[in-house]
Image 1 (cartoon, rainbow, N blue to C red):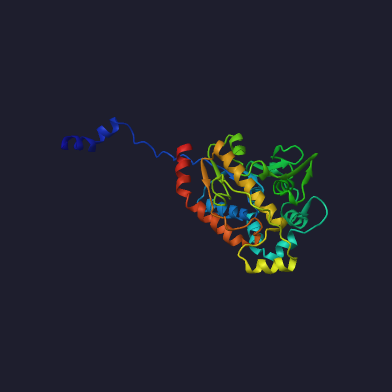
Image 2 (cartoon, rainbow, N blue to C red; image 1 turned 60 degrees about the vertical axis):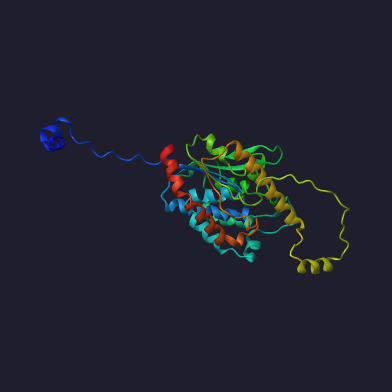
Length: 318
């Protein structure tokens, strides 16, 4: 053993073994494809997700976005994430009603033109094909139910179409198609990233802890209860009760919550991502846009907790 060690120390033996191998450069980690799901006000969590990925220096190769996921993803690739975050954090209950202008005519309760004008100030004339990475907004054609992938043309129009929640925002009429929120057909667009042949797909699902798995409950139908009380009496009763009346908007929002949750579970079961980021946002309502600080932080924390796993996947799939 000692004799072998002494031979290793001799220069002639080292030369016979060949020159020392140069340092081999480590292969760069493969970029990830992000599928940013819908969720209205919960979508501010996407900002926190992107901040955590930036901090970890994880490269993003493409983004597919549905609804608010399209808005955040588009602003990120356009270099306007700082402006969007500043806007989100500045929202109060009163400012929400200012930007989401209420209307009683047309196809939606909210016109959204003030919000669109704000986007025009920062991204006027910007085309999707001008972005540094591939970007797809998912929308739904209201007349046919077709899933529409907007991958070229006006960035602002594509984002508006993707978040046009039926009955709430006006549909977007573009190129002879009437488009509404993409969450009706593909709430978390993993399939879009797969179609673009991305190796590592990371999905952000904003409805993970909202309802849980679907349940079938056997129930007996009792007598129909009709509330004959006056509006003043109902208001007084509601103020004393922990349960509040849903109202028209509340029914629409809860129904849309159920639709998004069930469709996203079904589609992700058939075409799962390589990694799912699941911020716990069930306590934030679809219309709680004034809670951006909380949503952004929850998105950031959920992503930071998965950075190690994401790095492992990059090494395996890269």
